[in-house]
Length: 155
Image (cartoon, rainbow, N blue to C red; front, side):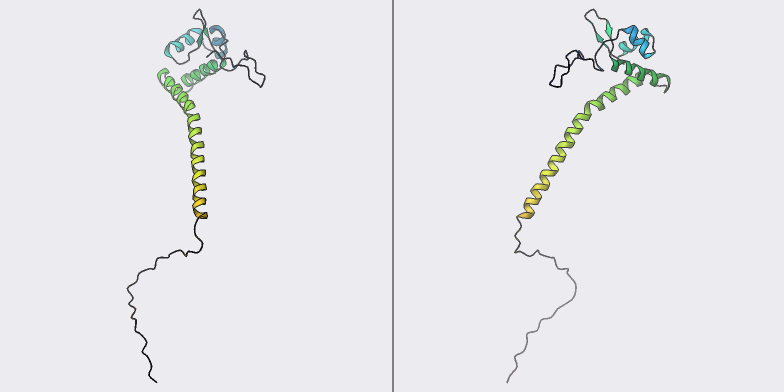
């Protein structure tokens, strides 16, 4: 990804800088993150922070990379997490971020399906015949009812 967005109707320039635009050389990135350049190289080798590369293979860091470097530093020094643990945390955070749009898509589909179900249910209820009386089940008891025909009276 080159960090540039194509020109849109909103007037964005194709050369607009974003958080993902790789602009910082390793010395500037080290200074901004408060780390030694050799630490940045080590993090790159371990796959913790992978900056973009120039044609000459030089590293170029984005603002997002620098924020990630700061997060790695904080997890390592303040929380005492080793680099393998930090790598796993970053992988899981990236996985969660990648799945969030899918979750939103599935929630929208679920809401749509629920609305369609409610519409179909309303249509079924509207089609009920109003001249029919609903059947109510009679509770069975052990009572015995005896039927005796009336006797005809004689005049």
